[in-house]
Image (cartoon, rainbow, N blue to C red; front, side, top):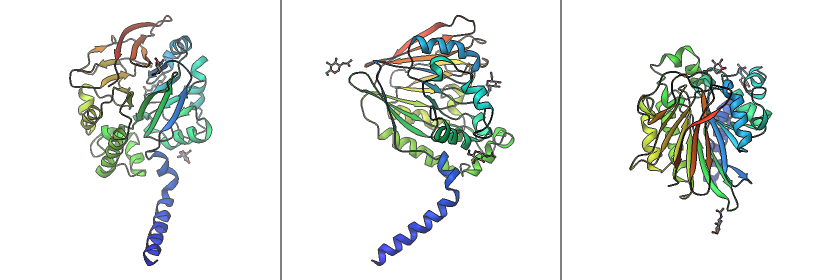
Length: 326
Ligand SMILES: *[C@@H]1O[C@H](CO)[C@@H](O)[C@H](O)[C@H]1NC(C)=O
Ligand SMILES: *[C@@H]1O[C@H](CO)[C@@H](O)[C@H](O)[C@H]1NC(C)=O
Ligand SMILES: *[C@@H]1O[C@H](CO)[C@@H](O)[C@H](O)[C@H]1NC(C)=O
């Protein structure tokens, strides 16, 4: 009995302590329980892109033609100040028409989202429009499709904490990232370790068959894969046989295919508002200056992908390939 009271008292005080910060802190912290999606379609079609609106027309056309199930938004939605920010309509609701205005958008946060009010983006998803699916900065999903309920497992992660060294990077200081990280207690090595542990636990918990996919903002190709703590993500994804990692950030369309002994195919699809530079170490990349997005179709036993060039009014497929489940 005594033991019970002690435990009870400790739990109560813990509740009190955490409650002080509960609202904002809870919103950004990882969610363990997967959200489950059921699609009636025979295959799973989705478009992946970073920022944004210039290729909206081409994406509308493509998503209509393929009856796409959802959009993967790899971040940099410009950053909003609140749930009432006029940007919601300007860069999202009114910017995408047709099928893109009906299907869910699955989000990860980019650095520009962190410059704004990240909590407002989560609040918007939870309380205003769940089609903008962003229940937290880290979450897991399970998609089921086709007559046999084929499963695809997803992990959405926030890579900003692994990419910006809060001690040295200018970005963290000038643009509000540091302030926002501090607000949530994300400026410590412990916070970083906690996030890695969460990712590893989720990957470890997944079913062994079917596609296992991950989504984050900063790429894992070339120098991006080496920055600050990013270098630890590739071995983790390889260890747990993730089939593909989708990212944005760099305004290019690039690909690193899986090699012998490497399970993961790495995608960058961020060439939607501008296209410049390149990151070394890729196997294929769209010519500098071109705009476009990535379209993927998962069927029972393969994942087909195509990069779609949409600099002109006539979007066209310029590169395609396949990934097999592990
Ligand atoms: C940020 O968004 C949250 C959640 O909607 C809100 O409670 C908070 O007031 C916003 N912060 C500012 C500075 O507007
Ligand atoms: C569904 O499963 C059955 C039984 O294993 C199999 O015969 C059939 O080909 C599968 N269909 C699809 C579309 O996967
Ligand atoms: C996103 O796209 C908009 C519209 O094309 C542009 O004004 C903005 O600078 C872009 N943001 C980033 C982070 O590239």
